[in-house]
Length: 416
Image (cartoon, rainbow, N blue to C red):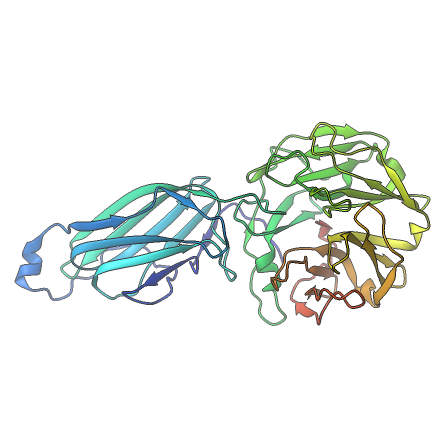
């Protein structure tokens, strides 16, 4: 079960100790002076530990997933680094790190820009603290800070370069989760989701009957969310770093629609667009403009007969056609693929599988197999699945993996 939290403390596969210990850092016990070990008279008389070299960056630029930032300390004698802590200045994220018990006069760490089995580090301001002891129990403490910069990334709501999934609960609260962690919910693993609650500027998401995640509509660099309320008004919540700004009204009359989906670039202009089906079964295309005050162009009719589908999702270009594609599930559980032509229209549908009625939500999220295409997650009452993409038109998804994730009580109202 997912439970929102306000603070996260992580073991750090995000940092590794190199050269001296060659070990991964682990979560430490409470920081305390180690019991003195037998020391020579010279060591005991040495007194204060002297840091002879400190290589800590003040600015880190992570432009590529494989980027790393070295962090080095050298001392005038062998020491054990008892504690090394990185704290994001939002006070919601902290990494507690230690090495092994090895005493050495040189310690080197690397901060990795991307860590597939842990949450990757957030962009923003950090403070750090390093505490070391020698064999005689003498201590030295150093503190400082750095700025971590990252370029904007699609569907990245917490500014750490990794796509996220948005989940709205029945309570009206909405939270972002790492797609990297979602796949690790493999059956039998019981691995918890590492989560980051999104700051919502006091907004309550419960008034919205429909929600969609279209991407960055206004060019701010952060992904946005649109919602249609019970009166048919469409609202835009622009993203800003790790929060959403107060909503702005962007349209009325949307009560005619019973399904919306967004985020796929349907007309090859580099922006995420929106699709909506009305109560008579007509599918409409809303091309994005790049202007946050009027983010969509006038609607264009795509076609009728869409009342046969109970769910639609726009996963992006998954099969190598010229535009973003569309998935639609009918009442019997058959999943259909509509290949995008790159002009906001689609080719004739192709059947790609049956039995999809087991899922309450279908969401195109992340790229776990690193093939450049968005994968698919099916969230269901009796269990969930991760579907990797193949790039094949007639079989766009490979063998699924079972996930220990259940929506048995309908607690997930929206999965975006």
